[in-house]
Length: 470
Image (cartoon, rainbow, N blue to C red; front, side, top):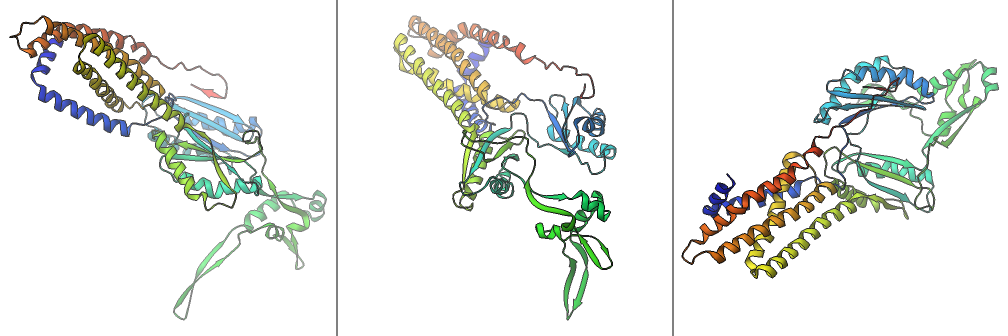
């Protein structure tokens, strides 16, 4: 069979050349559109359900939030494992799906079951889905540095300006803010005054909540002009909160400022973000969307951040902290260097032993063509370009070179021994048919030796207790 393929190829050179040109074009297209990353994404298809339950102990979070959600997620179609984790004030539920499940289909099904499970949660607790990113989606991180701004101002700048600019970049799933101080209003009540006025904490909370809203009315037409009527009641600062009326007695209002002290304080922090040991900074972490090209996502995020840098306050800098594109480009350069080095070695070896330059060109030309065809196969199988896949290609180049040298040397031997009147094409067909099957099956054996790697399966540990269900 191999000999027949060789003979047909040698007698139909035009078709082979056209096929090679099409393969090169398909390989170049696949190379330009193939997702590039530094490390392979071996993470499972999973959907994360995050629930915030402020101020509650882990056991309370477990009983009232994590347990109802995990039991509801057990019946999600194609789900393989459901794990729940409870911490102080927060709950995480991981729904892991079978391999090959479309991640967005999985998110939609989890959302359906989440709507049904929401009725079993405490009042005011609202679970949400995590970003559509994977475990290796952390592709870029930056830090905001400014000598004239405080940590609270840097964090506000990150949350309300820089983060939105990076989030609009193509392929970005989420930009997470870390570090700095998050400003919030704090109402410090005086227990003695509360008791004297017979006011409860619930009354204060309800009054603050009710006072921070706009109220819509109707329209009024005057002189053929239509005016919209509304009550504007959004709180604008500390003074507005202090002036909230809790109750009125004999025409005298009791304000919140009479019973409590209102001030701006930082939110509670569970950690800090420090840059090079030189002090704290505010930072942003860019997560790429599932299946996106990491190199493209990073470039888009850099362009978006560069576009707004001039509009930031004077002295404010956006410094890159982690940039995976450097590792990706290094992996690509390694493959390029390997290809060039091995092409030079093949040319020198072929010229030195065969004293024939055209024979060296045969191997040198076929190396990039073979690599481009491998990119076509990678794109068809949904395999991205990363250190492992590019490293495998670099290793395979050695086997391709070995087969090419054996084929060229055998062709030269047959040409030297052949009579002058015999067709050159027939001589080459015979030479290639002589070693072609052996080379094919030797490479096939090398390929088969890697099959056990493709048959490896994940081993899920069964965790007993309320935190995990399998």
